[in-house]
Amino acid sequence: MASQTWFVTGASGGIGRVVTEQLLERGDRVAATARRPEALAGLADRHGDRLWTAAVDVTDTQALNDTVDRAFADLGRIGVVVSNAGRGAVGAAEEMTVASIDEQIALNMTAPIHLLRRVLPHFRAQGGGRFIQVSTMGAQISTPGAGMYHASKWGVEGFFESVIGEVEPFGVGITLVEPGSVRTAFGAHLDVAPAMPEYAEGPAGRIRAYLDSVDNLTGQAPGDPRKVAAAIIASADVAPAPRRLALGSDAYQAMRTALTGRLAELEAGRRTAATTDF
Image 1 (cartoon, rainbow, N blue to C red):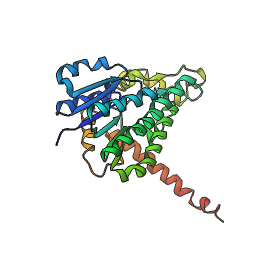
Image 2: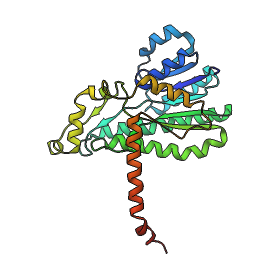
Image 3: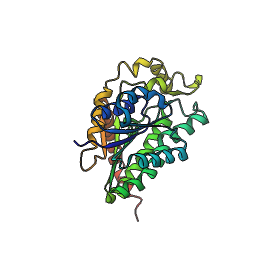
Image 4: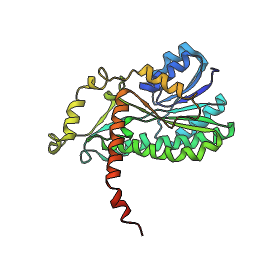
């Protein structure tokens, strides 16, 4: 395949880092953004000017907009944007702090919305492009003790689900990537809310106890980050753009169980639904 230019947020670690590495290894150019772009220094040494970097906190909308504009100005056509920056939060609803609630919405939902909005004029001007939003199986399922994380991910998927139809006439494709548990440092960077004794013995408390061991999310996760990254990269060449990309056997099974359960609940309420018509 012909090489092209990609724009990746959250490129210093996790899935974003591996995507960036694989793209550079195959000869593509990457505009890689991170709060700490110095973490990409080793890649810059190996790949030279095929790696363009910028320091940006994606929750700073003006800085994000300026970075997008500068990347297109410096690099010309950017074929694919991978919106990867984000992190998780753990805690029962009552345990969550105001700051943690605000961060989850700003980082996982609002920032991708603003990123797409800034990218779209450039995509339209160049006649198309592909936008890949890294989401999670947690956008289709829910777990007690992770309500704000789920809220941010369900919310961002609702936005992109709607926008897909708006931008298709411009040759812009959007894919929501829904990985399961992947062996990255995601678990080590969780925002864990202060514990309340009232929730210690309940479902939220049990989730907290499980997460006390970071190995449960890193060393034992079934997802291979290199295979996940490769699947994300390959999806950019699929036409039309896949609306969703479930990655991991755990993601497939968990989402299938959740979706079939919701469908059964809908069917159970079919008669009641009809009773409210004129």
